[in-house]
Image 1 (cartoon, rainbow, N blue to C red):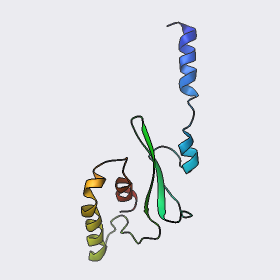
Image 2 (image 1 turned 180 degrees about the vertical axis):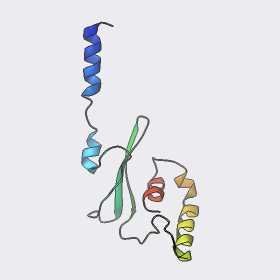
Image 3 (image 1 turned 30 degrees about the vertical axis):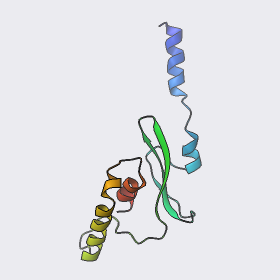
Image 4 (image 1 turned 60 degrees about the vertical axis):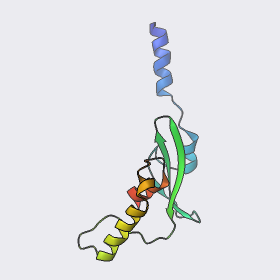
Length: 109
């Protein structure tokens, strides 16, 4: 491979186009979720990428009172609510980044 060919290859790597799905979803990058307060049903969106697979995922019930991240002095009811969600959706959460349950668990619970 000559110098000219190497320069062309390097230029192609630098000028890689952004995926149009990122712009359409208005997210910062792959696997970077954001809130969607204007969406009628779903509260978040993410453009998930694992290897070469890319998928736009909407997740989370709009207006749901989720448990959020564990806090000091959290009520027993919220602890049970979080545990119930994780148990109920464990099989789908285990599917990884390409499932809405994974993202709901990571972001909302």
